[in-house]
Length: 476
Picture (cartoon, one colour):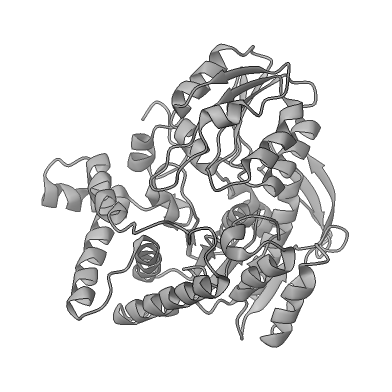
C-alpha cells in the first residue's frame, strides 16, 4: 500500500517528498486547533460537562454525515491514567498474531502524527496521510456548507481515524482514550471490549480531584454489550468501575497479580511473567515490572475479543512484536540513554521503581521538562533523589505551554549539579557531553519532551519515509 501511494503522489504532485506532503497536511490539521485545550481554571463542573456533551453530540452528527465509519468494524476501547498506551500496543500485536487485521490509534504522538494511524503495526504512509487529510478537508467543507459548526482538531482527528480504519477494512480497531473516558472525544464507539488500566491523579482540572471522580470518568467507556476488563486495584476506584459495569449489564474481569498473573521478573530488555489462565510463562520486550500487568491485561483483552482459546505460540509471537517508543526506551548504550514519557506522579513512581531495580549502580543524569499543566514539582521530587545531575529543559509542543527550564532548575536539591538548557535537543546533547560511558541519562517529565529529543536518534524524515518509529538509521 505504501509504495502504491508513493507512486500516486508522484503522479499528482510531481517530486513532492514524503516530508513535504506530510507538512502540507499538518498545516491544515493544526489550523483546526481552537482555543485552550482545557477549560480555564475555576470553570464550574456543570459547564465543563455541558461543553463535553455538546462536543460528543457534534462529533456523532459529523460521523453520521460520513456514513458512520466507526460502525464498520469491531472495536476495543482502552482508558487509564497510566499504562493505556502500552496495553493498546501489546493487545494490537496479540490480535495481529491471531490473524486479525488491526488498526491502532494511540494518543498523543511523539514525533509525527502518522504514529496515530497504524495498520498491523505500520504507520500510515505520509502520502496516504496527506490524501486522507485532503479528503477529510473536503468533507468538512461540505459539512460546514450545510450550516454546521466546523469540527475542531480533536473531532477531526477522531473522525479521520475511524474513516481510515473503515477504508482499510480492519477487523479490529484498538482505540486509546486521550484523557478521561466518559467525555473523551474518542467515546463515540460501542466497543466489544472496554479496558481500564489504572486510576491516578492526572487531568484533575477536568476529571476531578478524587480517585472516585476520576474513576467515574474512566468507567464511562463501558457500554452495554461489551466486556469490561481492568487492572485497577485502588479500593476507592474499583467499586466505581464495578458499579458502572453492573449498571450497563456488563461482565467485569479483574486482572491482578496473584490471580491473573504472577512470578514477574524484570530485566533491562524484557519483562517475564506467568499467565495463570494457561500456566505458561511469557515475556514482553518492554522493561519495567509494571509491563507485566499491562501485558496480562492485553492478553485478557485479546482473549475476550477473540472469544476462543489463544494458543501460547500466538500469544508469545504477539508479545514479541510489541514495541512502544518513548516508554522505558533505551536508545543508546554508551552512555546508556533511557527515554520515558512519564508525565504524572503515578508514571514517575513506576519509572523510579524500574530504575532502582534495573540500574541500581548507575550514576544518573536527569534531563527533565514538563508541561505547565502537570504536577511537575511532585514528579521531580520523586525522581531527584536517584540523580546526581540535572539538565533542566522545556518540551516544545503547539498550544500547550511548558514549565520553564528555570522553574525546573530551582527545584534541584542542594548538592545536585544543575544546568539550564531550554532547547530539548541542546539539553540532551549537553547531558551526553558530560556523562561517562558507564553512566545513565534519563529523559522524562513529558511525552512531548521525549518526542523532541528522540529526533537525536530517529529523525522524523526517516520515520515518515520508512513507516516505522524505529527506522534504519542509515536510511537504507
